[in-house]
Each structure stands twice: as structure tokens, then as C-alpha cells.
Image (cartoon, rainbow, N blue to C red; front, side, top):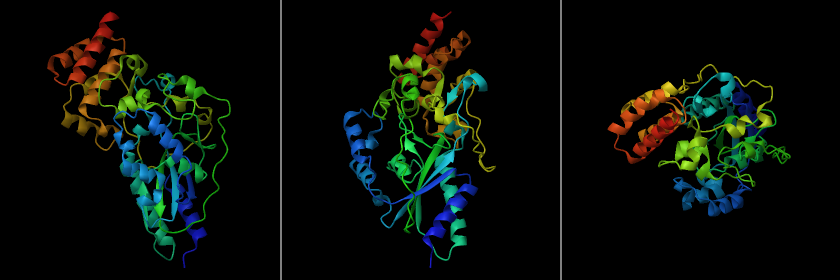
Length: 352
């Protein structure tokens, strides 16, 4: 006979031993925020993220049980990211999202969960069916995590833990066993603070705790596949992949805690200098794939790598990069890359 309370505590204990900093449990009732999500979807231009509009994905966000019909409980887990970047203290010239300094989380987090469930199976008298998702299925995961007691949804739409802030990755573990749910986190501890809203360089954070993806630097540098609007190019600065500004300014991310990555998870060497960015402009698609294999950057196609690199060099105010941009202009056929390189050259030449 499986003891649900014992199973729950075993999962929490083993999850902590594997580096997860938060673990909470909830049921498969529809997320409370689904009507709010639908309204946002109707009122927002989602750009190239057309998958958000698909009927099947909308249905699954409304009813998580569709992702695993036999599931009865969801365990929500949080895994820490490397420290949020402060370019003034790290002396990094290039900005990348903290999570991108980990190996590709789509691979290593599910592997950790497999290890977790092996440990659980060894410690109980019975089998538990499970399925896990980490940014790999249509789930309103921040709502579920709030309902599982992990934290509240902040004004920047991030899930914020009163103990660990928001610099972590979320993962959902669907289980075919009924386990006691944790109390939901119903408090809102943002108060009158609006640092995230006021600090967003493109004003992408809305007053109602949603984002306008069309102007969010994370969307523009990772999801958007075409040219970046002129108004956003200067604001992009040195952002190559993602943006953490709204997290960097959040008071809850300035708490004194240390979330240590397990020894088996080694941070990668993400691009950190203008010269490394310029070097990317010499690579073909196969070389880019090899360069970024097993990292979050791997999802970027050559056109996006070159576009972002050209914009960063255009903002660098360093004429030394004019020759590499001229080479791109001379050899390149992709119209997005050509136009972006031309803009970058104009920026650098105007500063000579």
C-alpha cells in the first residue's frame, strides 16, 4: 500500500538532493488564470508565436489533464539559474539570460526528474506513473506553481518566491497518484513597487502583469525571426539572447541566499565579449550548430545569430568592427542580415 504523504515527502526530499530549490503539489483543476490568458491572447499581437493561438494548445492550457489523462497530481519544481548578470561587476560586455548559461534545460531537467523518480521508486512499495514537462507543453505553469505554494506572479509576470526570488526554471511533474496538495500562495508581495515596469527598456511590461511580446527583448532576440524595428534596436544594446532586466531590478532577487548548482550541472561559456560576437559572423549554419550544441543558443538559426550579432556590434561604438560588417554585407544574401548589417555600419560610421 502506497502512503501518499510518505510519497510526497520522499519526492520533496529527493528533489532537494538533486538541486531543485522548490517543490509543491497541486491538483489538475483548470488554472484560475485561464480566462485572463484568453483575454490577453485576444488583445495581444503574438508575432511569430502562432502556436499560442492553436485550438489544441488553448484546450490543454484550460485543462491540464489532457496532457496526461491518468494524472491526478502535479508536482511543480523550481531549479536555480546561475546568478543574474550585473555587467558593472562581472565586466561582461554581452548580455545573455541567466538560464542560457546552463546546458540546454530541455534535456538536463527531464533527466534529473527521471533520476528523481528512480529514487522514489526505490523507496516505496509500488509504481507511480509520471510524465514531465519543462517549457515543452502548453501549460500555464506559473499559475500552477502559485497554486502549489511556490510563490506569487509578480508585476513582470514572473513567478516570485519569497525565499529565492524569480531566477529559476519551472518544471511540472504529472503523477498518476493522488497526493495531498500544498496550500496555494495567495499573497501579493509586490506592493507598490514598479521597478520592473519602469526599468523595461522597451516598455514591454504592462500594468496588468502581462507582457507585450512584440517589444520584449527576450521575444525579439529569441523568438522573432525577421527584422527588429528601428525603435527597438538601440534599446537592444548588447542583448544577444534574452533579457533579465526586470529580474535584475526586482528587490526579491537581492535576497541573501545561495542556491548551489549540483556538481553534475556545469555552467557553459556563453558569449561575453564583443569579439566573441564578431567571431560568430564568420560561421556557417553547421558551425553555429556545433558551436552551440547542447545549449539553449542551439535553437537560434544562423539568420537570427547574425542579425543579433550585427545589432550588438552596431551599438558597440567601436569602429574596429566595421571590416567584419563590411564582409557580411559583401558576402551575405539573406535580406534580414544584409539590412541589419547595413544599419550597424551606419551606426558605427556615424560615430567615427
